[in-house]
Picture 1 (cartoon, rainbow, N blue to C red):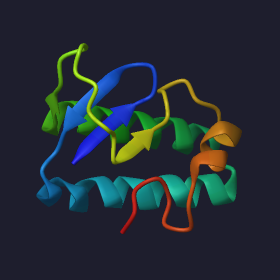
Picture 2: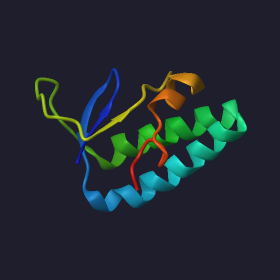
Picture 3: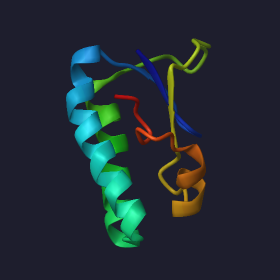
Length: 92
């Protein structure tokens, strides 16, 4: 799956990594629901760091369609709220 982090680039991730990412996504969703700004910021950074760590970066000139788009690290709670589906940022 191709994952884009807004403002940064794209990474290719194996489907097997989505268990780890979904756990962080669930934490992020809970923190957003409770309005925990500090927890939200920490978990968003952890989610994006996990994508960078386990994914294979695609070259900047690659224009692959992204199957998943994640917010930039400095995105606000309200900006991320607008990107959410009922499953969070990551389906499943």
